[in-house]
Image 1 (tube, rainbow over the protein chains, first blue to last red):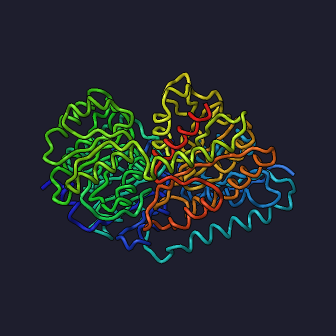
Image 2: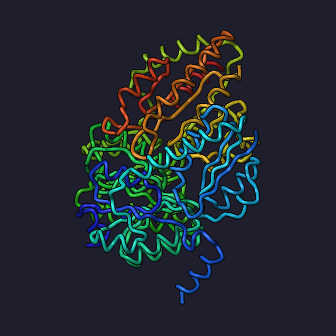
Image 3: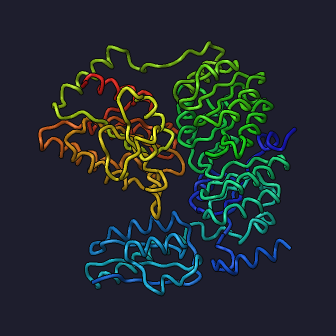
Length: 58
Length: 518
């Protein structure tokens, strides 16, 4: 069975990254969910972020 | 008097939270305009454009929070900051006991059975987060837009290799295992599976299926660009395969704007081999070409839902091109409305929050009315020069990017549409305003209630100059949605709004009126 069809047979369990309202709505429906306290990498500093991603890809 | 500002370093809030706070701050007396946001390039540019920036704001980073307000009196600043703190404190107290890890990786340590990630971070960071989720073996719904087509292709190929679903980017609607994700309605569980490249189009089809007493097995979103040649329909084909394999699905519905021809053929080829009936709504697509593949083409979103329901019941599907009410009832209603217009009133103004519903309206109004002007026209020559000013027959998608820069989508914050309605009603050549009201998760908690005041105002304004403004709407919602469907319909009808059971019927009704006006 494909992974997508396996998903259809399971209880969904969500990782929410971004808008917290989506997480709140899932919780209000008793859906299993966890919210990632996401923020821009490298404190939002573009130059630092690009250096970091270059390091990570090595 | 003038612009006041405050910067809070390393303090991050998501965009919808900030835009809604911005709206509340703007309502404070003495605040001429306000911007509340993170120091992204877009926000900084917006602040500069509306002359609410300075050197300090220009220097902040995407992780720094700022507020800038144009005040008629400096003493108001204290109440602005007071209100801001109140709203932010309220926000941080919500779910404050819940553990919120800093990364997808640590989320998985805590919730090891996670199987799907919903990602809605700003576009420039979205592909990286989606890649992390796929690498961890999660299916992905990528709500964010502004993701490059190359990133989309890479992500979808990666997902395909891993056998995972990559819904999006720009995927607003999905229902997986009966759970509405992002912008979706609470729909009965049933045996109709949907794969769709359209958000509100999918909502409309799933809602009508529910209203007709059937339900959905799965609703898989693909994102709007999936059926473009560059992407090749990867997610739609994957979704279609999964629904063919799924025991709980008996009928399949595919929804998209007309795909690239080659992709269209590829999809229809797979659909033609499906042992399950497939209904196709390539909105405005080639009916006969679709039919030649042995699948069921549909003429509107409502028609797609009706055909799917008929097939699920084992009945023979037929084109639905009429009304739920009898022809004679509709003729009377049309005549009653038309009798109230004066000779100057000739035009329709469609004020939509849903892009696909706008598109459907323009296609149904058809070329015999001449140009249907729009910000997303069917024919480039009918593009409005200035989207803030309607001409003749106009249908506007208020959810399009140009209306949502620095503002929440009108399905979340109806104020852009409320203001636009009042503007349209000042035009004495306007006879009819056409609107959608989208309920469900993700949407405003009372989309109808938020519009009522401006509907009354617009109608009163017309009445003052001895004209009658006809307002026709349809509600995309079920009786199980968090908003109250019945109350929403009653509120509209009490305010002399004609509520039709679907967008297609609302447009068909409006077209009859325009044909009668001549």
